[in-house]
Length: 400
Image (cartoon, rainbow, N blue to C red; front, side, top):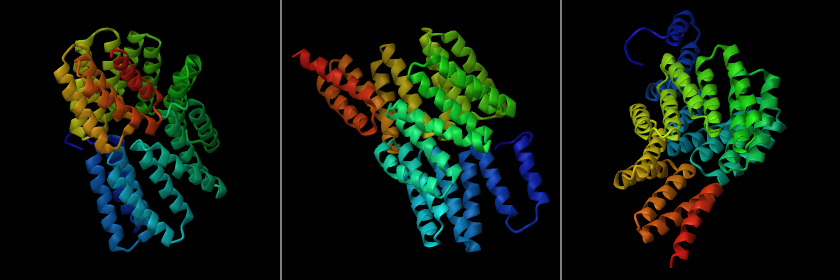
């Protein structure tokens, strides 16, 4: 975590280590430590803690706990978008849970597998896994896992632009969370509901949920969630064309993330600021903020953010007429996103690259990329990219 004063989170961890003396307390302390490291984006250190836990459990032949630890590790790899490693860990855990006839553990592993497919943009597989998981969670009365499946199905349908279904699942999740009183997760789902409503053009309703998210986070005293809520409000203002108001929200978000030492959220806030600056026509400043976000993402090894920010920089270079540099950025974004298996973003930047080739008069390259973008967009349900890619093809056809 670097040198300097010990953070409040780190202090609590060390204190727990000293005060607790039962056999499993060292494991629990390390798990809490991994959670904190993960929260602030220190993924490599968190992985080291999980590996130590796996060794500790393997030495004691605690097979059930070992499977659970592998799932926690898989979730962390999922945040890093390393979905190949995630799937291996989950399937190993799933095998153990089935051997031990542990239905709750098995269900948790199946949900994690659905999350893995979602994160790599394989929405068809995700739905195939998650619908039976939802039925099983409801059957055995596991409210927390039922809410988790609704959250994932909401996310899948949102990415497919199926906003009515996404909203239905998120609202189901909210009802379950309100019954259980989980304020942190309530904050998350309020933000998700707001995103769907904003995409449906229901701006006032979205604003209500974002404000409720901010109020809940404020009551919790959770600075980072407050910042994310401000980021959501900023996106709402940006969609209204209020770039100045959006920029102020994003700056407050960045300051909160900076105060918490959360480099990952700092990079998100910088990307948001770049978007608002671009809307104001401040293109050079927008590029600078994207480059700052990219530097943090590279420092953290956040490949998803590296891919997304590289694509955004491609858009800026294309706008400024720097087509060769734009092509470099787009190609980098596509390579990373393809490696991660993220169809949702890969098809977007494939279309952007196709449009660049079209601008440069490279008809054959443009058509090939547009066709690839359309095929991948069909696979993940992105109708906007399907329509744009086919529109580009039709423009070429009409020019014959």
